[in-house]
Each structure stands twice: as C-alpha cells, then as structure tokens.
Length: 203
Image (tube, rainbow, N blue to C red; front, side, top):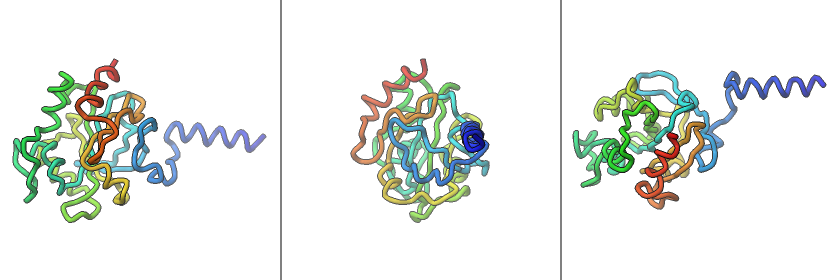
C-alpha cells in the first residue's frame, strides 16, 4: 500500500515538473509523435529555459550548426549579413519571411513561439550561452518577442544532433512533435507538409 502511494506521489511530482526527468538526453533527438524532451537549455539572455515553458503555444523549432550555410541563411544572413566568415546558402530567405509567405502568419504572432537550438559552435564544439547571445544579437532575435535562441546545458553533439541540421520541427500545443523537416533527407517537406499544418495546430 505504501509503495502504491509513493508511486502516485512521485508520478504527480513528475507531471507537475517538480522532479526533473533523469537523463532526458536519452530521448534525444526529438521524434515525431513524442513530446519534446524536457532538456535544460540556456537562452540568449543567460536564463535557464525548458521547452515545457511554452506549453499551450505552437512552437517552431530550428536546429542550428553555426557554420551551416543554410542555417545562417534561414537566420537572415542573406538580408543582414553572415555571422563570422560563413557563406550563407544563396537565394534562401529567412525563416521569418518563409513562414509568413507560406502560412500567412507572422512569427511575431503571440500564438507561435520560435526556438533556435544551437547544437554546434563555429569550431564544432558544444556552444555556450555567449554563442547564443552573440548569434541572437547579430540576427536580431529578441527573447522578449518570443524569438528564443538556446544552447543545451549538456553537450548534445553526436549523430542524432548532426542529422537534425539544417532543419525544423513543429510542435503542437502539447509540445508533441508533429512534423520533422530536418537534415538533408527530411521526413516531411518544409513547404508542403510542415507549413500547411501550422493553421490547423493553431485552431
């Protein structure tokens, strides 16, 4: 009986996020049909961040390697200039422009949150909060405008992370991954499968 009560107490604590899920990294990378793992990040302002803070919003997640030309282009390098000495992919507009063009919804819409997850630094090391701050400043991403640039507290580099770049995932209001347009062979097409789902998820 005591074990049953203890189990329910621990379960309730987990649901309420009072007890952190051990080794959340074992659920990395995020998978379609699963809730985004509640991994600890640090945002561009140096503040601790977890994706669970955005529960109730539709979330567009972008995975970034700082040396990736497409990542830089999606961030706006073809409009504001490249970060450091990387050549951005030519002719590729920023995600802000693409999102508005394909969904007719602005990334500034309060119902939508945009999170960039930096996974590799300019030297292919694990990025630091300073990298997030510098990147956000360069591309004009404002944390208070729900343009959130984060780095993981723990090193997430590896095959799983590498295969996410460049790319995007869309999370529903319960933070479940619904479309995966990551890597060079994405499961879902960004333009014909991910973007069209946004309006449905916002209902």
